Image (cartoon, rainbow, N blue to C red; front, side, top):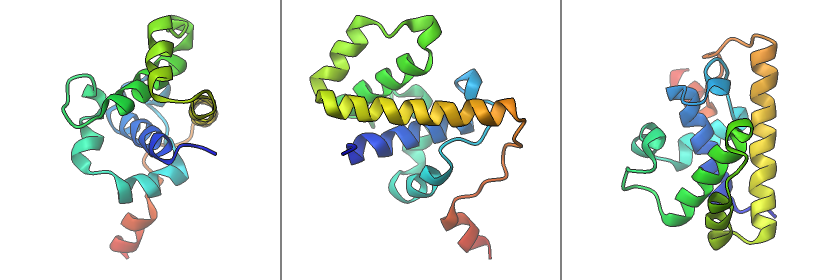
Length: 136
């Protein structure tokens, strides 16, 4: 079973990266479509907007930092080859099963991004349910 905290954090990170465009793959796409709904409800704007500075922002636990480092390394696999120290850091905080589940979520969302970029999806069209309801 996926770790809810790690899954929420992952959705938050990928949603935040959609906003700030940190990863080239995320620049022109909507990421974590359904997860964005949950993210809006569970995360503060402060944590979302400062996520690109997760290494220095004081809002993230050691476990969250390990998940974020893992997410970046797996996402940037071609250039990072997932360094041993990142794996070791992730294993300090996640069981093998939890790390597998986190990695599967990363792979799925990265796949969605590649589909959206490849097929020229227009960014900015998706709105989380909470925002759609407030607008109507």
